[in-house]
Image (cartoon, rainbow, N blue to C red; front, side):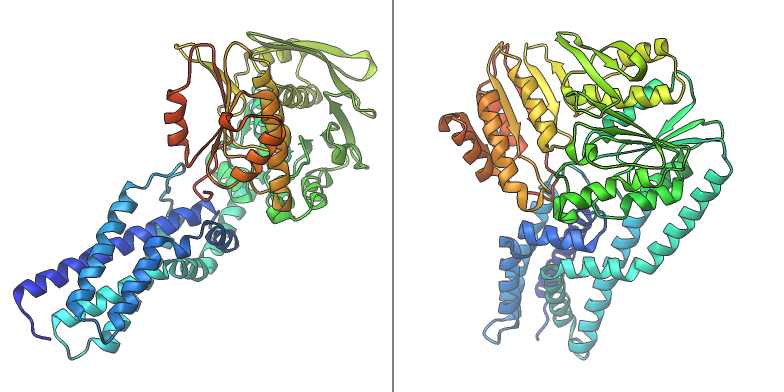
Length: 537
């Protein structure tokens, strides 16, 4: 191919643009891999659900690549098409916003480095195969077309990097686990309380931490550190020799997850807040959910104690032997040793009475609202009494507890709008309770903004349709965000009697906010129920 300076510049710019586009795309792939816990199985499920492998830009790129290989095409024309695709892709990726941006941890850097190395190796291989003996322009053309092919199959590069690094990650995790075990072994007097449940575990953790802190130096797993690796990190980075109690939130998406955490920390006390249809996509059956949650109870020693929420039939029906059991309920389920009565909601919060064995009762006041929060508080109070915290300290702590962010958190704006923020996560029971709170606020329009509930397996459509029916009874306007559950919620809301004009459909929360700005007035209430991550559309 004849070389001129303008051609060399043109081909160089196009190659550089394509390489930048590829680097940005690999970073985006890493973002979605991280949001799927670096798990290939979850990442592949996201690919299937999102249709990312057949996005418009990727299909165009595949077409350009095939055209570039055609004998009917010339390198100059092919490079022009690649330049257009690259610039469009760069602009799109730079403008892309994530609810949960990529965190460049050491693991993320390792993965990105391997992804980059694989790309470089493939490009060099292509140059060795087709570029030897040719001029710079041809080498730039081969480099560009190979980078374009890598973009088209970037998901394969991402998954290959995970496989390559698996032995390294396993070795690092084993070393960290042994270090965590060493730290725990050096603190034989540490009291460890495990908390799990399909929902409610994070709030219960916060409430228990606040109450126990009146008597003990208490540490809890921060944020969403509820996996084995999260607990290991908490132990290595946060646990101090003077801590007396360690509250461990235990999450699970498959059988054995909680047992693995218990094998690490060996809890002596447990709270199971709920067993419901959560993460059915990975658990498959509700019985598997229960079995996994009760891995915590099964791990307790003979002198341990389990606090169980009997409001859930799958907990109430589960027999526990060999360990002390305290069962609690808000709905006065038979067989419960603790039950809540006299719930009264006020503008400043809630008052209620917790009744226990042998005529015991304690009257409490809290800033929290919603039956789910009262249930979680009850579990925390029962465990605190098991830990020897005096009633006066319990009363004081409960009254000081603040609402956990994004979990049925009620705020009032200076403009007179009431915001019910329940956006952290959503489940059938929690969403119903949030709607009940919304229904009780009748000063103005009641608006619910929601994308619905996910990870419910083959029950997802049915449960979201039921959610829509409940919306029709409790809200005046429904703003349905994203497409994941749009049809199910709409069907349920219309079946529940909501007028079609009151059901508004938007693509994302930014559009929902724009729509709200056109309809809100003082006295109105907005419920934000769930906020799907970037892995859902």
